[in-house]
Amino acid sequence: MTLIAATIISERRTISQCSNAGLAMRQPVPGKTSWPWLPPWTGGFLVSAGYAVLLFAFRIAAHIFGVDRAVGGHFTSAFACFGLLLAPYWLLGFGTADRVRGILFRRWLRVIAPAVLVGPYLLFALPRGVFHIQYAVVFACLPVAMAAVFDLAPPPDRLAWQDVVVLLAVGLPVEFGWLRGAWPQPGLGSMPKLLLMDAVLYAFLVVRRLPGVGYDFRPRWRDLTAGLREWAGFAPIGIGLGLALRFIRPHGYVPSFWTVAAAWFTTFFFVAIPEELFFRGLLQNLLERSVARYGEARSRLLALGIAAPLFGLSHFNKPGPFNWRYVVLATFAGVFYGRAWRDRRRLFCSGITHATVDAVWSLWFR
Image: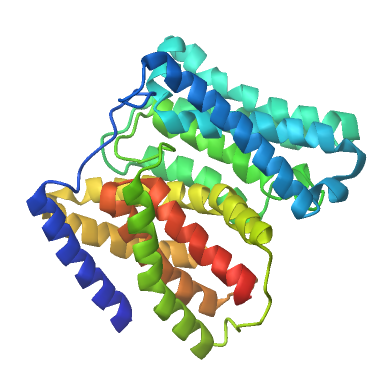
C-alpha cells in the first residue's frame, strides 16, 4: 500500500499546482455541440459523419475478431441493434443533453422516454426467435425507473441515496452478468453494458444534469498527452507488480497493426469509457462534491482514495471466486485512471489511459 500512498501524495502536489494556475476546474461549455472555430451547422454534420465512420470501424473490427461469423446469419439485425445502442452513446458525447431535455420538456415524457431502449433488443431477439419477456421488461422499465428516481425526487449536488440506487441498479447486473442471456451469442457480451450505458447517460446527463462528468468526445491534445503520461506512470508498477504476483506473463506474440488498432479501439469504447464513466465521471465526481467541506485538495484526494479501491474490488470475480491479485492491480490502475480524469475532468483522457493499459495487457501479457 506504500505505492498507493506515494501516488496519492503525488496527486496532491499536482492538484495544488493546477489549483494555483486556475486550470483544474476547466469545464466544457454545457450544451455546446460545435467546435468554436467552425460555423454552427458544421458541428451536427461532423457528429453525424463521425457516427458513420465509427459504425464502419466497428464493422471492420467485428470482421477482424470474427464476430460476424460467430453471430451467423443474423449479423445484419445484430449490427443494426448495435448501431441503435451506439447512437445515444455517441451523440450525448457532444453536449446534446440540454437539447434533449429541452425537447422532452414535460416531466412525464422525460420519465418514459428511455423506455425506447428496449427497441434494439426487440430488433435483435425477435428475428432470431430468442425473445424473452423478462429481458424486455428489464430493458423497458429499468431506464424509466432510473429517470423517475431523479426527476420525481431531485437529489442535491452531491452523492445522495438516489445516486446510490441508480448506480447499484446498473453496476450489479454488469458485475454479475445478470443480463448476458439477452445476447447469448459469442462476441455480443457488451450489448447489455451498452444499453445500460445509454440509460445511465440519460439519467445523469439529461434528467439529473450532473455537472463535471467530463463525457465529451471532442478530442483535445491534452487528452492524449495526459492520458499517456498516466499510462507511463502506471506501466512500471503494473508490470513489475503483475510479474511479482504471477498475475501476468509476457509472451512473444507480435500482432499486426490492425489487430492492435482494433483491440485498442474496441477496448476504448466497450470497456474504458463505460468503466470510466461509472467510477470517475459519476462516483469520484459525486464523492468530491460530498466531501467538499474539507477543501478542494483534500476532497479530491479522499474521492480518489475511495473510488480507486472500489474500482479494484469490482474486478474480484474476474475470474472468481475472489481474484485478489486482480483487485490489487486494478486498485493501483484506478489511482492513475482517477489522476488522468482529474487532469481536466475529462473521460476521454482517462479512457486513453485505461484503454492503453488493457490493450497492452491483453496483447502482450495475458
